[in-house]
Image 1 (tube, rainbow over the protein chains, first blue to last red):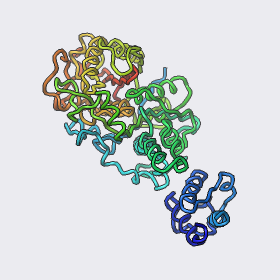
Image 2 (image 1 turned 60 degrees about the vertical axis):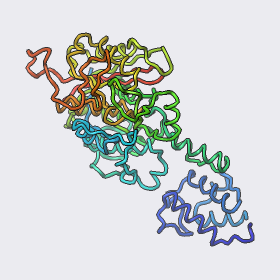
Image 3 (image 1 turned 90 degrees about the vertical axis):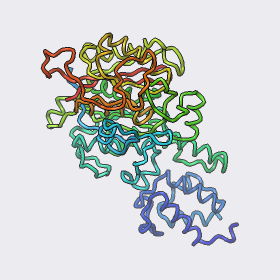
Image 4 (image 1 turned 120 degrees about the vertical axis):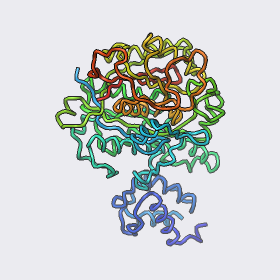
Length: 81
Length: 415
């Protein structure tokens, strides 16, 4: 599974998820912070479920607590593939 | 004791969005029930909530948010239709404003979704939003956060008496000095296949899908959804800020049947005790009551027991005043019913109207009160005491009774 996954695919899933959670799509960039996007711990818990479903990656609460930006999340997911 | 006044009301019901919409359409004889249910088809959550807010609120909370926005605007606490969560604009310190919201069930649609996800996809996919959306206090929490209400806030749950108990609890909170204002009401959004099946299994739901309280053909209640919120303040505080006063919560009485898990006491003694307690709390005699807003569910058991109860509590005066059921126009809003009916009662009293019991054309044997069948009419005043010359306060009782034997009655006075 991991061999077929690209960073772009991860970015797409993360971006779409954040938009679903209510973040303004125009503001969702790699550098955007979750704080600025009004994305909180409940959103990140949902994101973890979606990431698991798409990529088979398990993200623990302690992992997610460390991510501050969209790119942090993408890189964390990529590192676990 | 300082009177407790109502300065704002809001409602979302099967008759539409808005407390006045409910009042005007019910009094015009319109019925919001379609296909055997009272759904709030005119309600669009996105009119009141952002996408993020909407997905973080079960429908019962969404309905409460809309009703609360209207009530606060009506009370002059914020600009009408702003729809924004705002911390300013309160006439009292945030710590002195409470919030009590009744619900019979809470977020049942969220619960069902979570169960479906668990069965179909597995436990790892159950949403982290499940608990914060389905908990019965989610509505009270949402109103507190949205409007920065930092006094006591909690849910009240007593099945179909929840909304009335919530208003009664708010009344006590104000009378005890625990708060200067309380946002109080009820909300319910139970129109799900599970609730339909469950109430049907009890033979409580109307197979015909017609709500006709007190009629010989009544065969159960019609389930509805909706919410209502009232802004309650101490009269001195409302006066100091020059607020328009809609009316007063004159009294509150509650009792328990201690009899059966679903059936009321057939003799109506428990319900009558709550009505008497409300009268005593209000300091008024039965003869001063101008109107009774009945619980009037359209179930065979309730309407008979309640008729007994009204006669027990009001004596011969029961035969001289109009008694009608809001549920004939919108169905049974369960945990929201008591709050919605308090709003409907207050607005009817203000306009001196006795609202109708729709669908009632064949009175059942022994159910011989004046149920205002079919059409509203002017509220006859002073029929029992013409010497008052119209100065006497216009008073009503609003009855709410819940499964579990919970009885809650409000005594309301129009300004």
